[in-house]
Amino acid sequence: MTNGNGINGAEVILFDTYGTVVDWRNSVSGEGRALARTKGIDDIDWASFADAWRAGYAPKMKKVRDGTRPWTANDVLHRERLDEILTEFGIAERFTESEKFDFNRVWHRLRPWPDSVPGLRRLKSRYIIGTLSNGSFRLLANMAKHAGLPWDCIVSSDNFHAFKPDPKIYQGAIDLLGGEAGQVILCAAHNFDLQQARAFGMKTAFVQRPTEYGPTQNTDLLPTDDWDIIAYSIEEVAARLDV
Amino acid sequence: MTNGNGINGAEVILFDTYGTVVDWRNSVSGEGRALARTKGIDDIDWASFADAWRAGYAPKMKKVRDGTRPWTANDVLHRERLDEILTEFGIAERFTESEKFDFNRVWHRLRPWPDSVPGLRRLKSRYIIGTLSNGSFRLLANMAKHAGLPWDCIVSSDNFHAFKPDPKIYQGAIDLLGGEAGQVILCAAHNFDLQQARAFGMKTAFVQRPTEYGPTQNTDLLPTDDWDIIAYSIEEVAARLDV
Image (cartoon, rainbow over all chains, first blue to last red; front, side, top):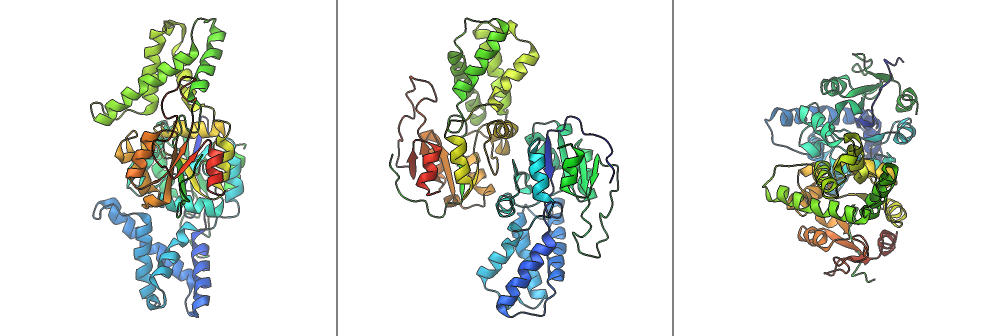
């Protein structure tokens, strides 16, 4: 894909995680399927379950962003939504509290896309790399340990009690990283995220993840703006930056 | 040295950095000495300069902690103090603004004690490891790159606009790491820091750094309480935790 131009002065690359670095849909559906097998549950479409989990979570974040709900951590929203869909899928009574607690932590164990770890390792050799994620801080630390994501730092919704695209999280990240927006690249698979990053003066790298939402995905298939880097993978982002 | 008892349930180890992980005194005096040579300045005791820099910085943090001064980042306090002591040592006019800016960044380039990197590498294999430091977030990220400190995450005064021993930074760190104080060990060379950590329910590891303040150091030579781990080095902390 194309590369608008080089990114002079960039010293830090922050990454959206869900969808950009890790494949939440196949990770969640895979764990659900495995868990179901151990319990003799065989009539659930676990890809749909993963989609329902994710879909119900955005409106909950929106309420926090709009101020109609007080700050509530990502982990807690995931758990609320899990309880809802276990009921919707008619299997709530098949899980103990301890099993639900553990299944909710699947979001701490999401698996990386194949290019993520090699791409991040390359970028880490020259840049400070970190997250800029709606995930909980501890969730992101656990995810990194589990998936081998070699972050230098974690920047999370927990740090600002705000979810993207709330301005607080972008400006807060810039401030933490030294106050120079132009030194910071946001890498994301979602155009809305890059739009907000650019509005705050950050540089932008779009990574196309056309199956994040499954085979019928119809959002973020293409870049909607002339992002500074447009790539198919995090390894390609590294190549664009000559790392 | 002795080890009170094992630390069951610990999953995270946070480290004080200045003095505990890095040797600020020899790093600062070494850079000062090298810089002076390039400028033909030969009558400065750079160890005393480093001591003066550090000594003047604690009262500045105290004003922020006491609320008599608004939040001011660690980097800014370092620079204020540098300007003061360049004048006190009679060499202010020998440095350009650009040289002062760069010399102030020596705090981003502090060198680790010899046991720090090998000890942290061992601990990282089993624990989430990070900073709990009064240093600026970006300073800590730069320091890690420069010194090869393999942090999983950075927790800084910048995250809470508070300097240790302000309660906000301890409780804030516990919250970020998942809310269970007993899962978090603070490792520090300073008894006051461990006292506050323990007051918040964290576990404690004392690392003796008897030359942090030079050959005549008279503080923190010994543990003042029965910290959970008492060790001579970060490698020994790893050994105590069977890593």
